Length: 295
Image (cartoon, rainbow, N blue to C red; front, side):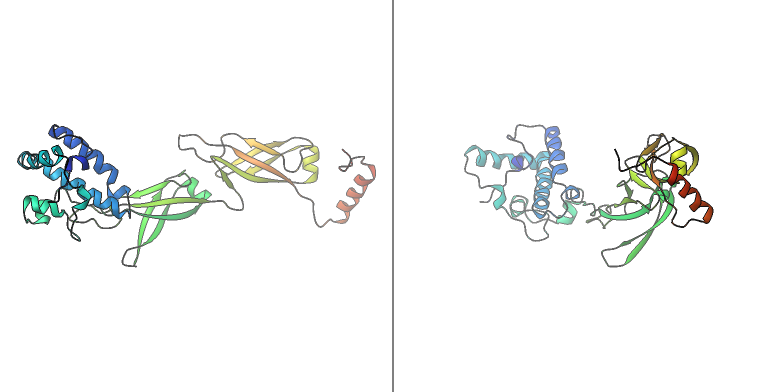
């Protein structure tokens, strides 16, 4: 006859174990093969059913005693058939061996507690600007349901949310089975760089545009940060491409602090000169000994 080793399914080598040991073994195996962590893996779904079936039999005093008599005969004599050969009819919660062992029974009623299956989680992604992420905002997020319809959720994004951080909406995933809870909806946040700021970890990088005379003579300029204006000293002779770091004026780090604001200098040459400007540049050209092509 077909035999199924329920102790082996729960990772136990002997039947000389307490009910507490069986419960611990069941929880360990159920956690490993649970559908929530093995989405789409049909083989693990079958193993998970075997685990629940084994626990149903071994967690009851009378059913365990009855099974142990059969287990001692088959395992003790080393002539058992491997439990994988005991199959389960389509959509059945129990294997053929279970039905032979207990007889025909109402599966829905007998296994309701063990077979409550939580629905699958659903994941989606939404892209927001750096400034919206920094300040936080209320966002409408549309998700397509399994029926093909669009369902809109209003989500409050917290200030300083991190790139790739997930927001969890409990119970908004796929429906559960056999009375189980619905799955959850996970929304991954993608923070998009823009023309003004680029997010680098917790730092914000932006361009600092300077005139040639500002770069040559030194000056103070006001820079528009992400949420405040910052006064910055420009040293004499700064070169295009050099960076100035302003500590603590970058993006939020989630711990009450902030990264740095990185200013990358860009020296801009005017494309159109009036007569006075052209005259001054001509004069500078005639008196200056600076030659950038000579190192």
